[in-house]
Length: 237
Image (cartoon, rainbow, N blue to C red):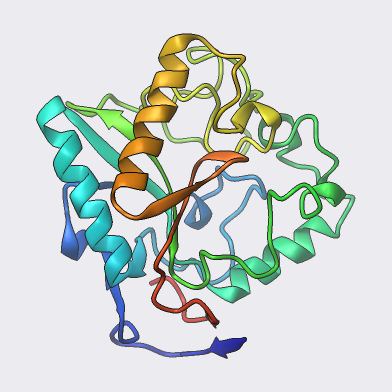
C-alpha cells in the first residue's frame, strides 16, 4: 500500500481532474467542505467546494449524465476523491465519545464507536484512491435548496421527504450520509417511488462501470480503478 503526498500543488497529480472541467452540468455539493455533515464542521484538507476524481471516474459520470439529461434529470455529487488526512480526521472523530454534535440527524440509531465495525466509515477508503463517488439525482430545473447553518435544528435523516432537512434530490428515502439501515440500497421498507429512484441510480452507475455499496444508496466504486493500491493525500482545492 502506497501513500502519495503532494503538499503544495498548482495542478492536480497526473490522472486526476476537476469534475467541472469534464462536465460542468453535473451539480456539486461538497458536504465535507461545509458544516452540514456527520461531523458538523469542514473536514481537514477539504479547502474548497470542488469535486476531484480520476479520469475514468469523471468520464464515466459524464456518460451517466448524458443518459439523465434528456429526461430532465441531473447528477449531483457530494464527494469523490478524499484526502487521507480527511479519513484520518474521521477516525479521530469516531474515537471521541464526547463529540455527538450531529447524531440526531446522521446516525440516530448507531453508536459512533461502531461506525467502522458496521461499515459506514473506513480508515482507508476507496475515495482516497480516487475511485469512489457519493451522489444522487436531481430534477431539472433544479429546485431551490436552503443552506444548513450551525445552530439550525437537526432533523432525523430517516424521516420522509418534506419532514427531514430539505434536499433538492429526487426522493431516495433518506438524506445523504444518513448512517442507518434505512440507507441500505435495497431496503424494502419504502414506497415504490423511492425504491425505483434508488434502482435508477444503481442501474445507470453499474451500466457505466461502477459497483454500488449495499449499505449506502449514494456510494459507488469504479470497478476498474486506475490506482487500486495507492492512497492519495493531496488537498481538495
